[in-house]
Each structure stands twice: as structure tokens, then as C-alpha cells.
Amino acid sequence: MSVRPDLGIWGKWGDDGAFRYPLLAHLLDSAATAQAIFRSWMPERLVLQMDGRLAGTGCSFEQVVVTAAGLHDLGKISPTFQGQLVGRRAGEFAAQTELLRESGYWIPSGPLLRPSPGREREFVARHEVASTVLLRQVTGAEPTGFDCVVGGHHGKWRSFGGLECDPGTYPVACEFYDRLLGDERWRAQADAHTVALLDVLGQAACDTRIEFDRAAVPI
Image (cartoon, rainbow, N blue to C red):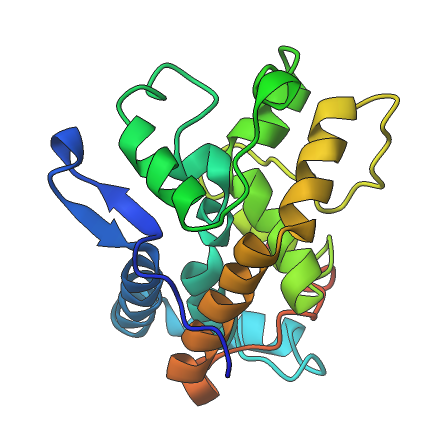
């Protein structure tokens, strides 16, 4: 039997945890909103230009935008995000973290929650970085493709998925992602959320393995 998305994996969190919006719903909302905005706002000239540059990839510009929007927060399927473990809000999310642990999800402890300042801390703490890693592992996304889009959706491009993991340089981040990707529950949920989203999108979805190196738009 295939694993279903765990609706306890949250995407948006209300004040004091009074309202938790499932991640799957947030991903579907994002894809639907992106499609509606694209069809009502995107200039036809730009659509034609980008469709031309994407020729040969099997994807249209609209499919790229909708799929990227739908998958942008896949990295929230991570203990550091679900429990806000690296930061000041861990206490607020303690009950959520314990619930995950009791449900069989791996929860890091000790050194894995004390990454060094700078990029390694970003790699462990930021969910958009986790999105790049999970996309590459779950869907085979390329570092010059969807990895670029999801890694920068908060305005600063962050990516760990396109790098060869060097334990000498990033010991905590390398171990963290080895454990995350090796954990049956977390990996199964990344797979389940991806499959569910792409199934709903159907023909509106794009193959996440395409590369965008020929599709850049001069700004």
C-alpha cells in the first residue's frame, strides 16, 4: 500500500499553534494561485518568448511556473522546519516535535542542532535549502533547473542540492541530510507529497528533470 501524505505535516502555522494548515493544501493552493495569476497577468509576448526558449524540454512556460510553485515548499518536510529546531521558537513547537517523535519520525539532537554560523547554519535551518535537496533526490531535478527556482523563493538564492557534500567543509549539514534522506518516514512523506501534487496537476505539471540554462530571460 502506498504511503499517503501526512496531513499533520504543516505548511502554515497560526498564532500559538491554534491553526495549522497542512503542507499538502498549501502546495496545491500555491500551484492553483500561480496558474490563475499566470493566465490573467503574464504578458503574451513573454509567454511566447519563454515557450520558445523551453522548446525541446517538453514543458511550457506555464507548466514550469505551476510546477515550481507547487513544489517550492517541499523542504518543509523536515524536522528542523516542523519543530523549528534551529532558532528561538523551538519551545513553542515542542509539542509538535514530540508528536512527530512519537509517530516515528527522526528528530535530530545534539550537534546537529548547533550548526556553525554562516552558510552551514542556512543549509540546516532554511526550508528552501531542504527543498533543493529533496527535489534532487525525489524527482531528479537538476541544479540548473527547478533547484534554482525553489532555492531562491524567499528572495535569496540558497542551494545545497547542487553541491557535492563535503564533510570537511559542511560536517553538520552533510550528516543532517544523510540522516534526513535515510529516514523512512521523512523520505516517504517527501515522495507522497510530490506524487499527490503532480497527480492533481496532471497535464499542468512539468517534468522536474529539465534544465533551464537556455531559458533565462534578460532583465
